[in-house]
Image (cartoon, rainbow, N blue to C red):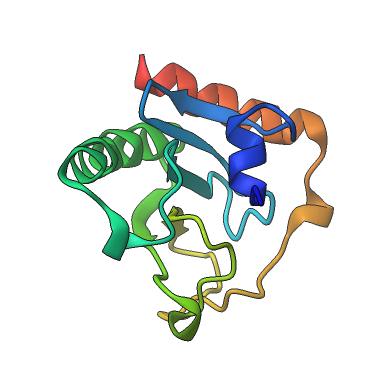
Length: 142
């Protein structure tokens, strides 16, 4: 059975894509813990990091810094970034398809050092705002 990320990759569920190639897809996380919160997923379905083959690891892990730099370039107020991946249910993985969170940090973001997975600011975002953030990251990648 396909998970939500498989459906996003297949185009069955809309997303705010910021980067795509043959191997990976990056799109805005709907919760937007902070503005620019992006998910990076391998297109081939792997449950978690333990299932990565060398090719998957190469494409995902080499895309992370490029994507992080692009996100940072979209807003001069970004002073840091949390990059994390929960692997396995016991580690808090809720979608069983490997994914990496890139969460921009701001001096005034009022988050502590540990990000709670229940933070959800989606009610504060319009479709236009999501698209604006996605477009800014895409522009920074080119």
